[in-house]
Length: 119
Image (tube, rainbow, N blue to C red; front, side):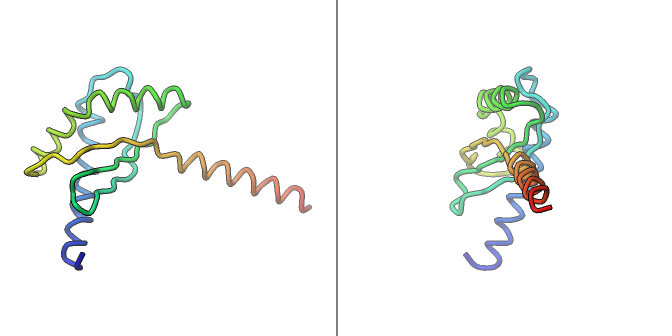
């Protein structure tokens, strides 16, 4: 992928993230979907698949419910996103939970424990 294609790919990924955020936060009425944020979007090199990472506030059960609600609305989200961005084909959409905050908190806790033991 040359520099121009890479730049286009990055711009498209960011536009997709913004549209997903708008659609999910403002237009989906599924009660299973709680407070969430689209944290990252990965567009496959061929542009046929989007992996959207979402961070959900609440416990694991709330996260799983929100993910189920998103999966149920996937067709609507794909069509809306393709129409708004002027894409010829709607890419396949895969939602995944972003657990990086939980991992970060766990690492911080382990580091604090190590520091306490070192004293």
